[in-house]
Amino acid sequence: MIPPKTKSPPECFTFMLAKAYQKAHGHFRKTLEPFGLTNIQHAVLEALWYQDGQTAVELGQLLVLDKATLSGVLARMQDSGWTERRPDPSDGRVMRVFVTARAEHAREQLIAAREASDKEILSRFNLEEQLLLKRFLMALMTP
Image (cartoon, rainbow, N blue to C red):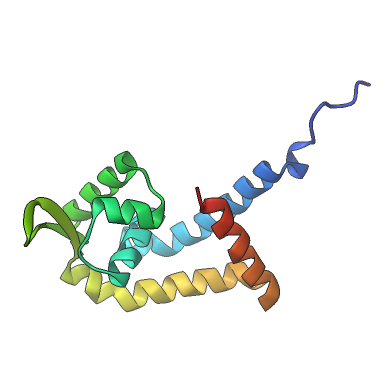
């Protein structure tokens, strides 16, 4: 038998990271189904709750999303009544994104759902491991 030239998929870090993502993403997706939101749409709402009235460029930088992806997400969110775009008062060429009354009404429920999902996923780790995991993930996200 010829030995493999690469690690088997379960030992491959990229594979393990992808599987962890699938599990966490799938779990949260089910939590958001009653609201009719996707994971990324929820992230946009949380970013706007942090600072409402951001531009698409600012949202993309904050969420580490490319322009093409974010453009479609924002269009669907506006069509479904979660966000609205308004011109910047000092420069009408710039459009700013704001949450709607619908989003504000669901804010507490959605944040609680995300916190519960995070808590469940992280429950297998002690506090130190949770902090390290967050630090490692943030480092991987940084360009």
